[in-house]
Image (cartoon, rainbow, N blue to C red):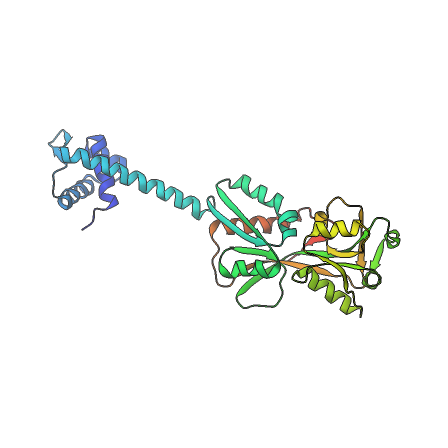
Length: 309
């Protein structure tokens, strides 16, 4: 039969106090219970650990060595349980999330910073990429959850709406249309249009918006990087349309942004998790931070807004 932690703890108390009476009081057990635990330990080990009479308790040589080993075992158990409690409370561990580049760069930094102040021992991993790659990270288990747009519905994913992100027109500062406060998709269709790459969820939405007004906007140029796109617009090569959370990534070029209507187009960003999966504690704790931001209406760029539930 294996030695138990209860037996080792009982023996440690007696050995350290050199008294069954004091050890029983310390552990808040009866002396008979304590004596039985120590006797069971001696029987399992096949040696006498203590020399005792009516007044004194002394350790044998085997008792001294058992004390040394028992201290290591009990200390390691306490330390391990402390670490486990910190993990289960979300105070340690890893929080891995996947998201779109604009969310990673614009929406998350302040939230992650607040989270890390509360839980400095949690390692944060952010994996940014396009929608398909982000969803793939969640399905594969590489990411605990994602903040992303949703394409085709999947019964393998659970999601809840988080933020609404309105498209705005982006033009060179000197463009004739820059004098207007508001533009339509038809206005943009008459200009050289600068588009993001075809794999982006932004491209899917701009193509759908042009189709909705019966217009075709064959891209005059494409760029996968938003800062590159901003440089092309600033250089006067054309106009573009981008969601509000993307706009801070355009770079320092001389561009202007205008409201875009006819129709108003928004992308919805959801918190996405793998269906029927329990989140790790640290990830669940960060989800609470996201929810607090939504409920409190934390500041987001103009054109973006939290979705009420």
